[in-house]
Length: 160
Length: 325
Image (cartoon, rainbow over all chains, first blue to last red; front, side, top):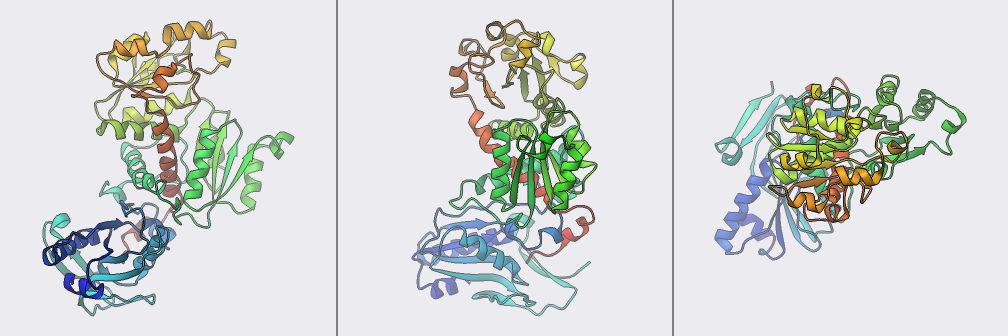
């Protein structure tokens, strides 16, 4: 995935990796390290919490936990790569795109996900996907990362 | 962030006071305020979380800081706001509080932020209208968002709150800020002291779990932080204190007094200050004053409260498990 990002961006010039809270942040850090190992350039990282940009505050309840957002002062003329664990409905990415608009005008925005599980409700597609899986209704994809969960794993679970 | 924030009971429809909240609920508000601090540092200081919500700021008492702070908080969450001041409104024609609020509700509002001179006014209103009600100060009862911003500021400075010693100085008797602070601080494991002229301390104040510090020197020697309350000038006319000059001489927080303290004290003041009465300019503008950070935190705390209350009422917790992707 790291190699594909660099290829698609024609290098690391102006590149910014932005992880979506929570697991996307860890994945972005790891991709950043891989790019640094291969290219010898440290890629700046950002994190984004889209909770305040969700379109379903009423539906999901009063207290979704709001995480930290930290982005460089300006996104103008950068190539921003959104990094997230699972791409499903596309609504998180829609919220992230809205949030980016409040921080500046990136030259280009790409979407990189570990798992594309299908089931889109918006016209949004990944530019780089680690794995595409078919997931039936009532099933769910859980991504675990060592930093938060003590292990690296992707599991298909039945919705309880 | 508190990972188990979703396990804490929701705040309910209204925020009337801190007396009825649990320590866990207070921590959820403080933790939610953290990410909102960053929103106010952005070039575009706005997130769409409360888009389409209509909020009325109903202020029956004079206020600059609190009203503007609420208004910024509302606008930075993209809510639509209306300010109603009592002068120039139907209130001055004798309309009752409930009638005013019901008329506003008939225009389909979502939340009311109320300040009123009568203790209990916020609860009275909250019990009678469907909109969320936030108490921005009611008489001598509570001023919950002020205490929350004080405590967020203390947490910024000290990190850990439990075991900290905070002395609240001045007119404890008439102060809703003192009351909200005492409730909130004691719940969070902070030791609270109160210091002021005996005529301005409530009777049996120790029953609230606080230590009475008779002299300002005692408070300075004892505390890690002082929350210096405004001495309302009306109190002098009412005979609670002999004169402002004497109050300053006996209870004023001065640089000389602080220099004799065993450690550097963090100084809070809810404003507006009477420089040279309860606090000297040297102290208010000094290196240990957090009076302006308090004001900055006020916007974040109010955003957190608005956001948490607006998130929904009632049967929504079950849906919180829903997927986010």
